[in-house]
Length: 309
Image (cartoon, rainbow, N blue to C red):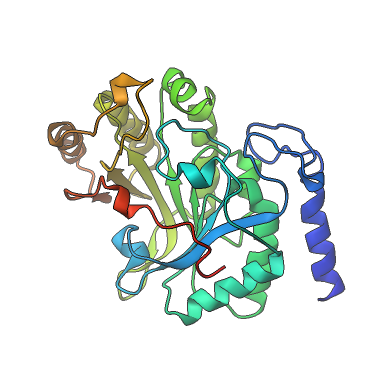
């Protein structure tokens, strides 16, 4: 390892000593093993690194997306489908150097991109690994598959490294954000983070196969009884950014242990989802991915068995 690389890793680790990386700004010393809201220390924990075929068509393609799933999460969504991963230190501890090697292994398997899933709380170290991979000749795009709950500075650490943002936008209502994810400031933070993503990738770029090489996709998971919220999100983002990004409207909400939240303890109906799609069509929005039936299944949740780690 070169001295420059050593310094870069050390500089990244210093950011964990009084951790204020994400909007939670817990201030704990994750480098010494203390745990904030994300639930993981500074060490990288990865539960799976493999080809993934269930993203948007321009991300997965026929060959698959090279998905790297990180443990922990800065949000605590009561409906999380990846609860075992996001609420625990499930996974294998790896170094920054090992993460870089994983990127190349996925590229060799034919991955269309490197898809970093829930990287938010590890961004300083991941950025070092991304830069090392580019310097070693990695050719495929980097996808930041994030929760939307980030600061502008957090996303700014990826400027010049990230190619595609696969961004969630869960709430426009602070009350719902507080109730279901413990983050009343989610709408404000999500808009702030998205503005930085759009600055870095202001227009979508595709290759000749239709695979995205640069750009922003904003996902919204429709929740039971919340069509009006989804419409407000569509209005807010489309009025600000127009056709310079893609929506991805999902109806795969899967109720898991939601007895304490009876109002959302069901799946989204076909009628609810169709209302949202009709609204988008009426607005004349064309840059939009939609889901067909049969996707709200637990079988779509990968096994956190350390594959590829």
